[in-house]
Amino acid sequence: MIEKILVAVAGRGLCEQMVNMLMEIPSMQRASVTVLHVVSPQVIAGDMANQLEEGGKILAEAVKSMKIDPSKVNPRLKQGDPKTIVPEVAKEENADLIIMGSRALGRLQAILQNSVSQYVFQLASRPMLLVKDDVNVKRIKRIMVAMDSSDEAKQALEMAIYMARDISGCEIIMTRIGSKLPDKPEDDPVLAEAIKEVKKYRIKYRCILKSGKAGPIICELAYDLNANLLIVGSPDRRPSIAKSLVDLDRLLGGSVSDYVRVKADCPVLLVRR
Image (cartoon, rainbow, N blue to C red; front, side, top):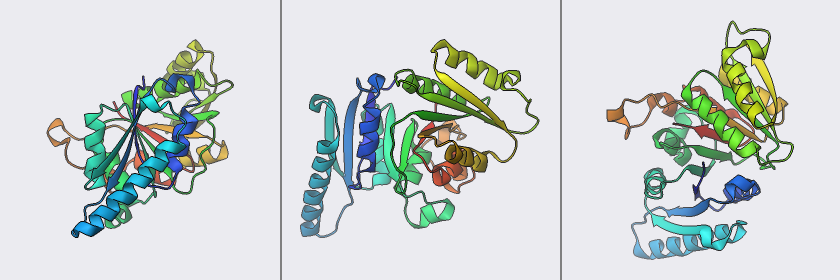
């Protein structure tokens, strides 16, 4: 499922740690990895030369720290605006997954502080794994999936199964947040179907039904259950003629996936079809 990964590095080391954790999963080891560092353009030529030299060092250190077969690594140093360069390179490389760091800025703060991950999040058309600056990257043993009836949630579960089936003792935690939910997971059509899928691979699992506001409850459960990775479906609501434009609901923080992106205390994988 994941054959090409794009990792956007900024010199903080978090994305590199995440890649190393992922590469411990046998199914992920076949993937090739493009390591990208973007240098912002400078007006003065001398400053640009210094920036490129420093960017080259950041890129080299990132590649060196990753536990990957060198033949599967493609380092790329680009000049420009990271908000546009990252999606462009993801499209060029046909990446199945984007990995980025995130300061987890919310709503207008992300716009005012020029958040790269926020813009890439609502412009990219492929799964995106965000690693917040204040999150500890740990070995994946508990994968939490936010379930609903959307195709994106089904794909989120597929991603969780893809990873968990190769991790000894890994548990998938399926959460269903909403109103008028049944008492038992097996009586909920969404969870019943999800359970059937997980059982095919003999993966350990548990289900949680809760009423309330989805974003806050998902984040609370991820914290309480010590999830190492949270996977959330993120439907793209833009019409086809507006795919190159920002999704205002995400940009302003109105979606569940945006709330989780900001508030969750573990790495968050946002899945789109």
